[in-house]
Length: 399
Image (cartoon, rainbow, N blue to C red; front, side, top):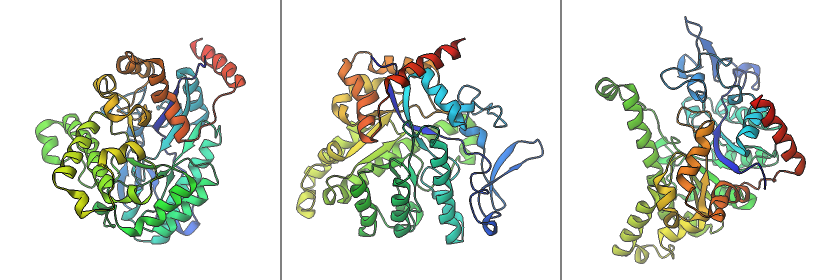
């Protein structure tokens, strides 16, 4: 039996200071994301003269939390940004492969929309993808980049998907809420070239939480009344459930009817809400005779979900124990969200798996933890040599 038991379908890589400034032409360097230290020496990401992010907040696993986050890369878990250290951590945890998502550009590249120069916006997306390709080269079988796209330009997005597919990227990152970002809604035909290239290359399209308009962020009034962490908990639930709205949009958009082979993934949003959303959509669909108005929709929303959509879970205990049949065991994936503040880390990974899937049969567990992700992302399984190396690395870490 393999010592590797997990395909982790949602993790993040904490960007290093040189991601953009070392990969764009000289005349763009003052326009792309860069690191500057404050008076206390704490690094922050800047875009122009605006502070847009805190690198430590994306890398608290094992070293802190949102109230006590690392103030330097040295203080982070080294696997947050160092690919070789990430692989060592994966070996220790029995995780064979990790799918990787961004931080600084937003969970759908939407942060780059704030730039005025179209050439610079696209260069930022390309630079990030190139960095991820380089990062994954430490072991491209196990570190799986997802292509960020300049979704505001469909033609350029298609080009970028094709370019990155040749470099080993395993999927496409797209905003789940383009309408909130001044773009056409999901069902608009202008997106068809993107759907078509996804089908042609057989690459899943990810709706990561927080990929829409996030300008509101933490509301000052809520923070003042409830406290910062309570306000963050409120915001978290808001963005989890917004993926339910994005999913509803997708299921009624006609995209899945036009492209029966396309695949979508709801990332970092959990699975417990899915049965309700599907039941509510089917109820409204049938009760309001939607099929009479929309003859293109020949299946119920729940049937389109079962055919075309995947969802990820990590911390939940109730849904994995009680609702697997309502979501579909062939369409559930497991993630840890490493190294984010809400991630599972260390022994908590296996504790949560036992608490959620402990009552399931071995086949069901293997599908959710391994088979579904292996197939969706076309992961090359470990060899005997990999197994021997894992045992050695794990033993060294114990010592």
